[in-house]
Length: 260
Length: 133
Image (tube, rainbow over all chains, first blue to last red; front, side, top):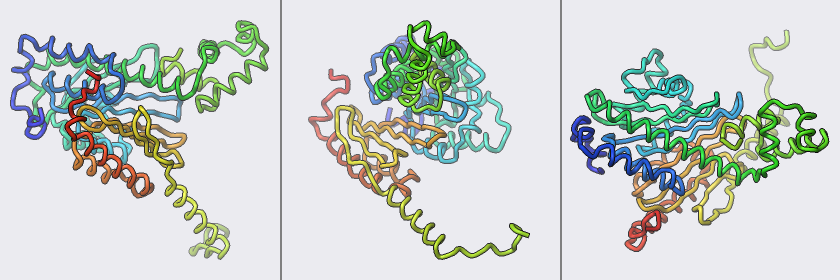
């Protein structure tokens, strides 16, 4: 594997994906994802799955917009991490054609199939090429329910046109399942972190669930057998715990991270 | 007309002193580092203002590094990666532009990261499987 990373994969994608145990070998790694206890273990699995799928490098990006102004990006990097520095320093999130694709589509595609129209987009793609994604597959991991959170798995190879061949059809099947598993694991991880850091109680979550459903203070007070002023002050405490400005943002944050 | 002068008004001694004091305060704040913390979740290096936090955790393949950068009221960026050798770790530390704003954080990071990598290379650590198997 290390020699692959240094010189590029000597095999063709077709020869790797046509192996009789291809799906079983990748699946054996993918199914272990939910049991990964921490990010180090998850990264190890991502690296292993990347190699077994026939790619050389990969990166998983999880994106959540907490409210209109606040965004959260999380990167699992099974590639040269310097790529992420350059990407982040130039704040290329807005220009990234692959991220834009993932926001509006759910089908895995080759990077070459995504139209690049602006100079900014071209620079993002060129940067990825410099860091091992000369040929790339973009695998979106969308969320349901109109939430902003989404995941994006990028698989890469240093060999030009590596993913253009016949093996892509088999690869996209396993890549999609890997992307969804990583995304689910990542959200569960963030949810645990948030619960621990904010020290939210079951009552807090109930309150946020009511807010998310659009209930008024009076209605919530009636449902929880409490007074409206008590409900308001409880919301203030929850807002402070979550570090947000108002109860609407608190409920949105809780929904984005799967707390309610 | 006010606001249309070709040459801006020179700074008064008072406002110049205020600007210097403010710049000094920013530098002092950035120089402050929260004392290193070690627990089961790893070793944490962070700036006093909370803008940057890096957690180092030994793992089967080397050292797992989680870097959390907070831009107050704007975004949170978390990077997670594994380093198996000292060279790539040092290269990564040197490439981070925040090292200029938080020099003490990065001095600590480099020293402790290299020490952890050296320890994980020792045979007794290399034999430990990350999942405890």
